[in-house]
Every structure is written in structure tokens, then in C-alpha cells.
Length: 239
Image 1 (cartoon, rainbow, N blue to C red):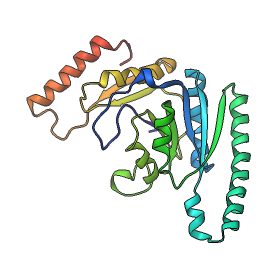
Image 2 (image 1 turned 60 degrees about the vertical axis):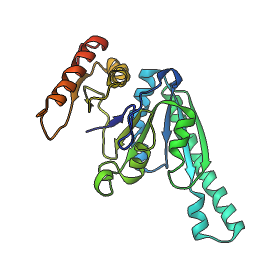
Image 3 (image 1 turned 90 degrees about the horizontal axis):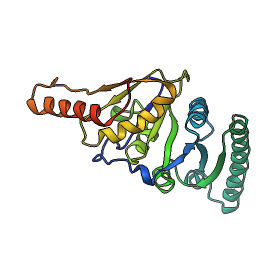
């Protein structure tokens, strides 16, 4: 799997339909800590931003709380923060140069917040078209696939979020999988995916994973209803 997009809901809370009219249809948020994992997402962000005609909001956060844990002297704390800010500005300039070289408008921002807890609120405030972030895929149980930090963001935002594994290599999109649990508004979420799929002429497979394999009539009815609704409201020949 080269990347995963979470659309319209997170994995722990009740589904919520994307409010397309309130989204910024031209902004992709790129949170980065300047690691190799974050840098790897650039190979996805650049072609998607060009294809969807989006600008990119690059954001980096300095973990002030972590600095305070290791240093009690206020003057040294300020010095450390200034040093990290200077390094961050240098990294951000390089990213912006690469964006501009590819004809992509970009802005950058440096925040001072602990860990990654700030990101869901930042996403909610800016209401982006898409968020793209990397993951190392470490942790336990539910978050071992995506990594604990990425998993926290997934569970706290309703905006579309693309997760790119550290070792992924961008090769375009020939096939996409839309995983459904038969939510009533899946057709609206599907329409978002189709906007991206059209640009790449990608096939979309609609999949439901179940342990019972439609043993109950209710599950079969949900599946039939979704199939019928998709055929009526979604116009895409490669699904």
C-alpha cells in the first residue's frame, strides 16, 4: 500500500459527512518535522497539488514542552527555542524553493506546541482540501500500522487525511480501494475520491471487510442499497 486516505470520518467516532462547501478547496496541509519520513511525503504532495491545482500550507511545530523538561534556565530555554526556529526557517525555505520550482504556491508557518496534539485543531481551523503526512508505522495494536502520532491525528479529525508510509515510492495512482462499512453518506465521500481518481484515470474498487460474509439479511441489504445508491449518484466509469 503506497498511501491511505481517510475521508469523512475517523476510526473511533461516529461518522460525519464532509462539508465540501466549508472546505478550502485549494489548500493541502503538509505538517513536517523535517525527518526522512516527512520528507518522503513530498513526492506525493507535489503531483497531487499540481493535478488538483492546490496551494500547500507547510507547518512545523517546535515542542516547547519537551525543551522545558530538559532545561530549567529560562535564558537557555529561549536560546534553544531561537536556535530551533532558525533551523526550522532554513528547512522551510528549502521546501518552499522546491515547491516553487514545481509551480506550486506555498506558505509556511512555525508554531510552538507540545508533540503533535496541536495538529487536529490546526486542521479544523484551516479546513483543508487534504492533509498529507508520513508515518513510520510503529506502535501497538490499532496504531501499529500507522504509528502512534499519526493514529492520534486520524482519530481526531474529519478532514481528508493521506497517510504515506516511510518506505513508499510514488508511482501515480492506477488503482484505489474505497473501504466501506455502509454508512449512509458514503456516496458523498466517494465523490471526493473520484475527484482525485479522475486526474489519474485510476480504477476504484469498493470493498467491505466483514467476518460474517453477509450472513445476515440486514448486511446484504446494506450492501445492495449502497451499490444501488452509488450506481445512481456516482458518475465514474472505472469503479
